[in-house]
Image (cartoon, rainbow, N blue to C red; front, side):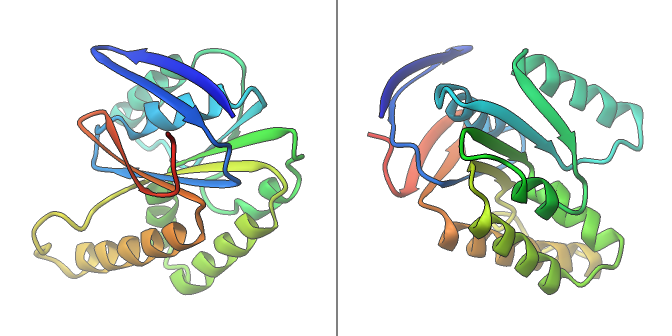
Length: 190
C-alpha cells in the first residue's frame, strides 16, 4: 500500500491505495471519474498503459481526446483499442497497470457495429480475468436517468447496465465518482 494525495481543482483526495487487480470506476458524464481513475493508476508506481476505446468522428470528440491527453500528462503508453481489448490485455506484464477508458465507448462501438453484445461482453470479462497486469476500467452510470424515447437508446441503456453489473461483480474495488468525489461501493481505499 502507498499513501498518496492529489489535488484536482478544488477537490483533494487522500487515500491509501490497496492495489487491487481489477478496479471499476463509474459515474455520470463529466463526473471526474477519469481523473480519479488516472490518479489511481499514477499512484501505483507501475508502467502505465492507457487503452483508449473512443473513435474520433468529429471535431468535438477530437477536442475531448486532446483534453484527456493533456490531463494525463506524460508517462503513458497509449493504445487505440475501440473494439478488441483481449490481445492487448493478454500481453501486459504484471509490472504494468492498465487504464481502460472507457467501457461505455467500447460498448457503443460494438452496439453501432451490430456485434453480438453478449459475446463481446463475455470475451472482455474473460480477458480481464486472464490479464497479468493491474487494470482500472472506467464506465458511465446511465441508469439514473429517464427511460429513453427510442429503441436504440433503450437497448444501449440496458446493455450498459448489464456490463456495469458484470464489471462490478468481477472487480476487487468499485468506486462511484459523483461531482469529483469518490464513493467506495465495494472493496476499500481507506
